[in-house]
Amino acid sequence: MAEIEAKTEVTGSVWKIVTELGQRVEAGETIMIIESMKMEIPVMSEEGGVIQRFLVEETTPVSEGQVVAILTT
Image 1 (tube, rainbow, N blue to C red):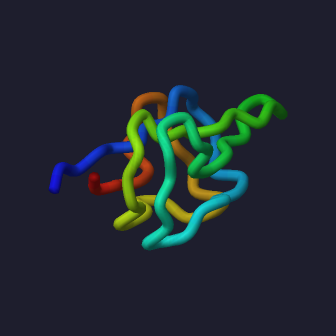
Image 2 (image 1 turned 135 degrees about the horizontal axis):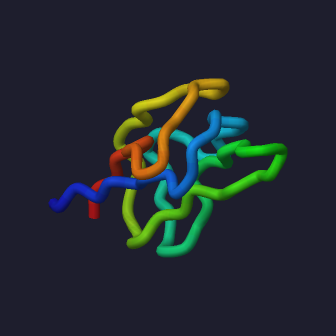
């Protein structure tokens, strides 16, 4: 079982987590949405997997490249 790190591409804050722990997601599926400069930027899974844990909560500030969730294949 390999771990997959979901990272944010922008600096901002977590606006909404749209998935749940244990949920299976496909490649390209949105995991959460980051608000940056009044824009909503999705954090998407690069590979299909199961969400094991979130490293942030809604309203948490995040930086570009920060790991925000861990998935397993």
